[in-house]
Amino acid sequence: QVRLVESGGGLVQPGGSLRLSCAASGFTFSNYIMSWYRQNPGKERELVAAITPSGGTTNYADAVKGRFTISRDNGKNTVYLQMNSLKTEDTAVYFCKARSMLRPASYWGQGTQVIVSS
Image 1 (tube, rainbow, N blue to C red):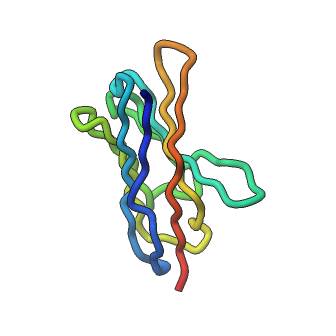
Image 2: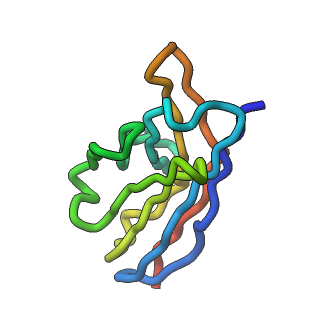
């Protein structure tokens, strides 16, 4: 059974930091591109960051470049999103996504809420 379980969300003040984790199971993690998306009510889900299976290549939305860092540990089947210098506009539900490099398959986690507020 495929599972993606996000954790690490919460309430933080502007300028603060959070580290999100996404623990994967039920598939070969090292064959999947891993991504973080975020979404607010009434808005489309948007890509925040992505990382290739080896971890050698990453890409970021312009809005988070220089503040967020995506990383992965293939030994622990986990992808992370380190979020620094948080802004109120980073408030959203953050979702983890896995996309296969070998076949047309992708999976989503259930999301974790991040609220940036003073």
